[in-house]
Image (cartoon, rainbow, N blue to C red; front, side, top):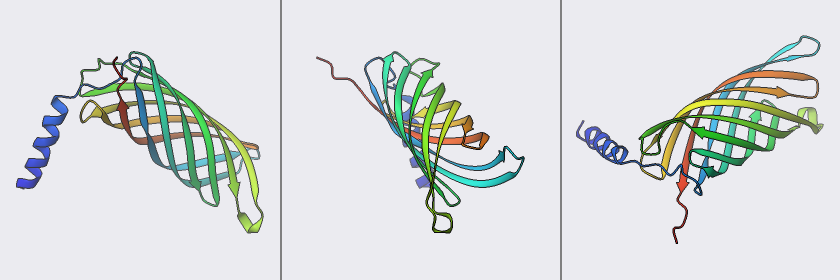
Length: 180
């Protein structure tokens, strides 16, 4: 019990003094991951359920205070498919940088290539995803934050479309600009 109290005290002390670096000229580097149960409906009406695991590292730049734009790399594993892709995002933080937590909204576009090795025949499918995310980030100090968010994503595949709601957990490191 003493160890838990000590750890919570240290976390509370570090978060009380947090002052995140979400200001113009700074960088954010991190990523997110999610676990999804997904239902895809084909043009013929066939429904297929999948379990999906996604890892998505990102880098962003604050072009103005509280507003960042950036890019992502994507890796997703879904049944017999492995997906690799790139994407673009923009994110806006709603509260002041001095807060130990902040609310944000994010939109993104991803272009992915799906590779399948079903029955020893390699098959490639190109897909596009458009999404919006709303979440909260808890800052442990001025450079590190942990994100919790909900995301809606629309997928445009070769012969089907998908609508997905996700719970996403992310981790960001904020790099302060050099002051001359």
